[in-house]
Amino acid sequence: MAVPIYDNHVHLNPRGRNVDALKAFEAAGGTGVTLVTLPYEEVVISEGEDFLRSFRIALSLAERGREATGLRINVAVGPYPVLIIPLAERFGLETAERIMTEGMEIAARLVTDGKADAIGEVGRPHFPADADILEASDRILIRGMELASEIGCPVMVHSESEPHTCPDLRRMADSAGLDSGRVIKHSSGPLVTEAENRGVMPSIPASRTTVREALSKGTRFMLETDYIDDPGNPSAVMSINTVPKRIKAMTASGEMSAEDVHRICGEIPESMYGFR
Ligand SMILES: [Zn+2]
Image (tube, rainbow, N blue to C red; front, top):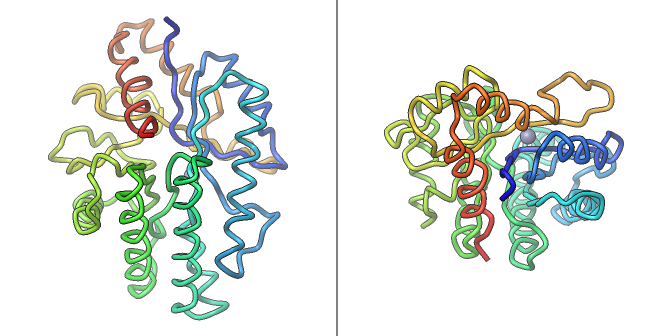
């Protein structure tokens, strides 16, 4: 059986390498990705329905990727959390919150219809912002968690990474009736123990030192690059072949066992996205 190699956070840009990047990932040994929507230059968000046009770009990139490769491509759609700031500047916070919430509902509809596989990346700005922006962001996220709990799908969270973050996410998931194991913390530190993550699933950047530290505590985590596919700035993040490269090197050196790989890149993504 082929070794599963899964990257849980990849962006593709219609103007970037997009399908070619997926081909390079597959050639490096990759078997699956979570393709996460970003705001695209092609769509300015001025009302809730604009999110649908934006999410359709991700869905069509995924479709093209499936035609060109044998990869399992799970798609996460959702209102990108930082967007609340320019929306609040243009329309006021109340309207911004409504537009973001509509984006959340459109994302959930696409998952219900079987077109997308997760709600994400959603959450709150990862940098200090006004308290009222953060409070509105939390309300929008809780709405997303409620919808995810009805559907049974995961929520990929973009947020700050502070000691209070996982306890906050756990509290919000509990109040929304969502199993905290359905909450994925994107760009997480190696918070592998239950005491550290409160049941939230960490998705950890695939750098050598971080993966090493994570493995020293267990195997309940996912790996990601946050590949950004920005034609103007190709070196902004890890390259698309980082997860395959890291796994191959760490299995060759004996730091990661075959069972570890099957858990991290096989069983966990399957249980996360195979909810239908
Ligand atoms: Zn991202």
